[in-house]
Length: 428
Image (cartoon, one colour):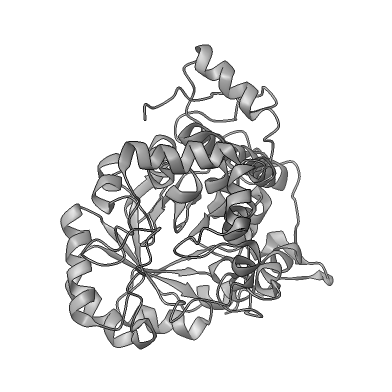
């Protein structure tokens, strides 16, 4: 798919405060005008779900949007963020704002990236490739999911700075073979997920008719019939141009077709242990990130195993119901990090959310669902727009809080809703 011209202005018509690292300018012309029309109602990240939902069968929307059981883990992530408020400072010269961030030796244009999204190419046409293109264009990191349907080698060719996220069994020979494949492809950062010894209880999939593989039932047929843009634009187009989608990256060898009766080999994931992380560290020469960390003690163990970073996450509320929000324990984890990077996801939707994480000491933030919704609406072009929407919010919020850089933030800029007079503890 050919790359499309990028938009240079925010939806309000205002130029972002800084060009270059923070806001690449567009090239104008017909492509920009089409983008403006398509994006005129996409003013905040929540808007992308509303528009994408109209294009997707209910089962596919629920696959992306749904949480496990009662949804309390997903709600906890939002509640934790909402329980902190920002304390702005006045009469500060904030004219030279810059939201770029250095992470693992690279300079990124924004303090956030695109998290791993399993089955992205079944939600949006060539979803993983579109996310990779957008991330490369906007100079933000993108993590390719092991549950992707496009070969990891092909994604690296599109975006050499992409990271790879692995779901691993407690089987060292299988781990070694996949690790070697990822290294041979040229990836520099490997993300090992620890929160999936088995899949969470995703009741919403059963209720909506989603299954893996997809079962052709009257409910599924009806949903596909009333969502022709997905049925024809994603499923039929994929089969016509690329053949049946396979689970390409769950192991060193190609997995089964997504829509066959064969299932992915998920055996022995419940045997994955810290000893395997130690073995990966000895074999893997690049950056090693451990994902799914919530308990600060697990972050400390990851550091002692040689991890370069942890990605605190409750899997977007998709694994354990009633799990603590990682944001609640961010400050405690920061206090134990040493030289390790501490990143976080789960529930972030606004620029103010990102500022709160950095005020507590986070090194980076990842988001997932809003970007796959953007890919559903308009591929890489709309993903780029989503990135710029959040960049624009962060730029504005930095000015309104009274700082020029994210590193200028500290817990002094935060207050808890329930105790407005008390500064937030750093966890030290």
